[in-house]
Image 1 (cartoon, rainbow, N blue to C red):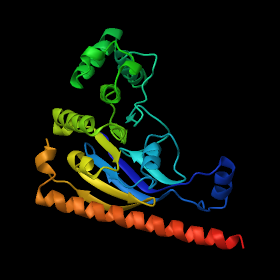
Image 2: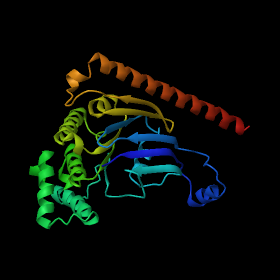
Image 3: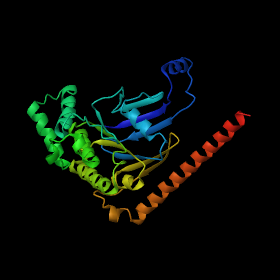
Image 4: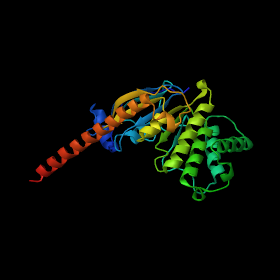
Length: 291
C-alpha cells in the first residue's frame, strides 16, 4: 500500500505571520513555488520527476517528505492526509545524510530500529542487525560494515544510504537527485543497482518511488513514468513502457526511447528559454524603476 495523491498543491516560502494573515482572508500567497499540482502516483510505481534547476522539484520532494507543509491543497497516502514526516516514507538525499560518528552498519541499524519502534514491529537487537547486514549485502557493502562515512567514497556512502532506506521497509521511497554528485561510472553502477533492487521484489510488493533528477537518461533507465516540471507546474506526463533491466548501451538507442529523449530535451530548452525571458523582463523592470 503506497498510493500517493496530490490535489491542487501549492507552496510558497513565507513567514508564519504572512501565511496566517492570508489564510484568514482566504488569499493565495503572492509568490508560488509550487502551482496547483495534481498528481497520482500509483502503488508500486516508480515515478521520475524531471526538470531544470529551480523548477520546484526538490521543494515538491521536501513537501512529500513532510519537511514543509503545502500552502494550499492536500497530499494523501492511501487516502490518509500527510501530516509531517513519517516512517511510511524514507528519503535518500544527494548529500548522503549519514551520521558521521556511526559505522555503515550502525547507520542502517538506526533506520531499522526507528521504523521498528514507531511502527510496532518489535524487532529484537539481533533481528535489527540481521536485517541491516542483509541490506548492506544487497548493495555490495558487507566489507564496509565497520567503516565510518569519512572512510567511504561518495558512491559507497550512497550505497549505505540506499540500504538504510530499503531496510526501513517503508511504503514510499523518496530520492532527491541521489546520484547527482557522483562520477559517470559510479552513477551508472548505482542506476543498475536501483533497477536490480526494484526487480527483486514481486510486482505486488514493490515500493512506491518518487525519484528527482535532471538527467534524462537516468529517468529513462529507472522510471515507469516521467513527469516533467517547469516553473512550479507539471508540463508533461510520459509513460515508459519497457521491461527491466534496461541496458543503457542498448536501451537508450532504441528509436522509441530516442523519441522520448527528444521530447524531454525540447521541454528542457523551452523551459530554459522561458526562464531567461522572465529574467530579462525583470532586469528591464528593475532598471526602469531606479530612474
